[in-house]
Image (cartoon, rainbow, N blue to C red; front, side, top):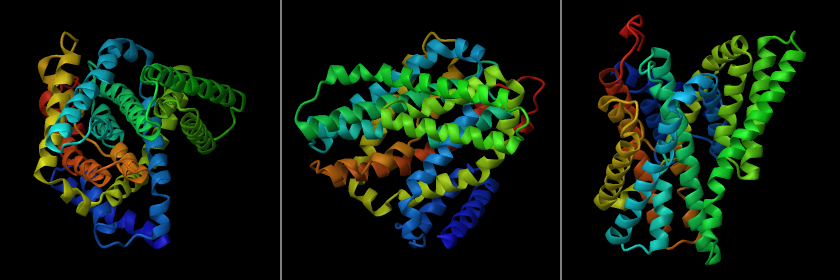
Length: 398
């Protein structure tokens, strides 16, 4: 496994640097590194590393979500609240409905198969969106209207909705019937419960830090990570929105102890460097290129059609908001990439015995291959053109 770790860090960093030199997002180089090192490429990673890759990816996501939470203030949430709420549901519903119809008529799927596929594909990727938005926050793009924070907050709930809908349709497949209304009512419970769990753990962590004031920053960072990992594990066990729980811990720390939050954020910024490499290389390793070929050009048509309707959903959700047209187009671009959810659950229907499970997996993989680069490049390329920075902030900070 040590050899695999060396390969991941070395090849991931090199290709990330090469892509950055060509003014492309470094994460694309890391994804390519994973594809080359993984089963679809030269198959150089140890089986034991691939077995725990999901856990490593979750740990990397926890670090980046903590960073996101540590940068979200109460005033910002009040400002973006209504627009963020609409962005959390409308685009994913539009894309899910469109992919369901397209899968039904392009691939002759049953309505149930089509709906299962639709809400695998419909989830936006926190792995791509969150680090991209944090990079823009650091460069202060969109700072005046807190646009990166808007995307961060709404994209997290987008995932909760998509995964819940996927679970509903898989439940129908497994049992033949499921209380759809009851399951849909669980969505706000999952969201509120996740926020409540994070708030409780964040409050306890603040009390702990206030009592043990002589702890150095290293121990404080470890305590924060332990609390966040516990929130993620407990949230998953209880069926709550664990991603929101992790972000809420960071948010509460910022509200209650701004100085400490800034210190912890600086440490997490350093931890993110190796975590980013592991996250994207291992996502790339999970991509099965040969499987994606099964979907063919019709698969491209289906995914493109879904993105068109998702984009319409974003424009409708932001209509009449405080965003101007350029900023709305940027949010639209930010909502394109898919990776994390599709890599995690794309094979679930196949394992459960859903008819055409191989094709569903192929379409999930294809959605990663097509949209992760599209979204990442789009964010990097269009942020300077569509978002503003404060006059005192030089563009060179990008």
